[in-house]
Length: 163
Image (tube, rainbow, N blue to C red):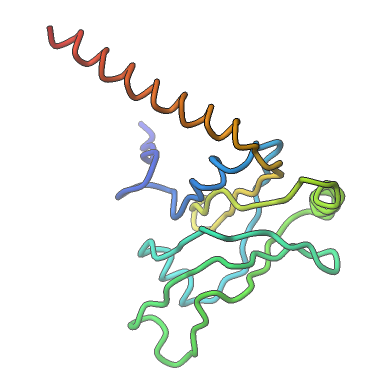
């Protein structure tokens, strides 16, 4: 019998950090999976869940992809002999064709590339990237309205099962 990892955030979960704001602010067109080049202290901090993806974005420079603005809080026990920079620019590991596709799509007006989440895949840290387009104000209102309706529907269903 195989043991499955739990979904979501918590003990036994593979998700380290999510960018919930990106799903609200943008329409997601296409997603990619990229590896991350990390230092030892960063891996230890990620195991402790000390990462944050808000206001993070992807930059393509010299045919390489970089993760900018990702905040990984250094543990005081892990980085004693290294000067730890929590917001340093980290290299993303992608295939050349994927980098070319992301670069060409981000050159179009209204398109950008943002990270959606950091997660464990085996003993490697992976970053889920997305090519996105910005939402208009009425789209954000519709998303909020739909979320409220789903919450209200869940309440009604719970009340019906109790009665």
